[in-house]
Length: 334
Ligand SMILES: [Mn+2]
Image (cartoon, rainbow, N blue to C red; front, top):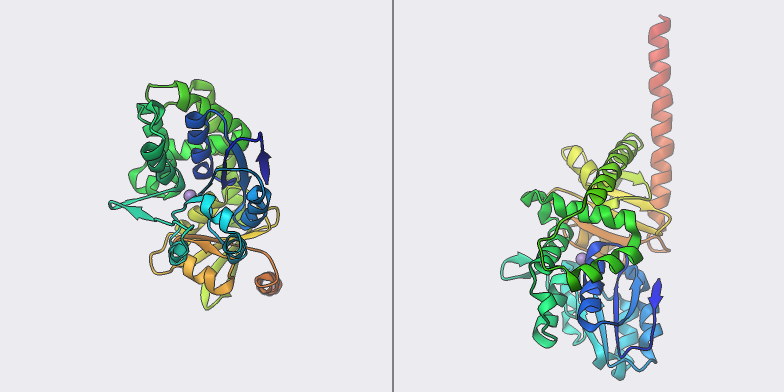
């Protein structure tokens, strides 16, 4: 959890892990000048709510974050807090929570997939109109965020959207927010990367390629909830790893499960249309969330059995390996 608390009357709580979480914060900085900021992973929302709960905020914006039961319960028991929250989420798994007055999940609007940043921008345009929201630069920046976050960039071949995410991976959230808050405020031209940025993005792409092929080599095949799954125990670039490996093995594997011990989470990714990972993850854990092709859940008591299964799969694969090798050995000895 990252916090920048300066005693402002507004605070934005956003997703720390991707450019959609960043986009709303950059817009808020550009429009409000200064605003308190808290960045969290999805399961940390309750902690963030506890931080803002007894402060004198007039408005609490929550962007690109889903409410889990623990956060819902906290808000339900605090009328003052409930009134201050304005929520912008787009994850399909959360739509059923819209029955709560403070929850607002809209996955599609006018036939176009939304993201936290596009929803927040529309709200700002209505209630805090500003010329910085109307520039070519801002519109293009927001579309890059939307395109990447909804994975529309794949069909649209919007490589700039992917490059923006790569730059975020390189810069980290603090530098990224600082840079793009300033750009949105001052830049009225088309969105572009300078030469240095292009160079570091290309270099990073090479690293990512190597990382993915390493993950591919170490992929563990197993069965989970009756599905053929490829498991990758890896820390970085989870959307790239998940999507690329799912694409490569789409006939054999229904989805890719990434085990990330640094984030203490499971990430599920697929390119297939015959499975709904958001729904599947919800069956496994009440703390899960996501969409058809991308979902996640924490590693904790309800999900730890998955690690046990992976362990068994590793042992089984090793045994099969040994058998296969000894068969080869027998053959060559003959
Ligand atoms: Mn998002």
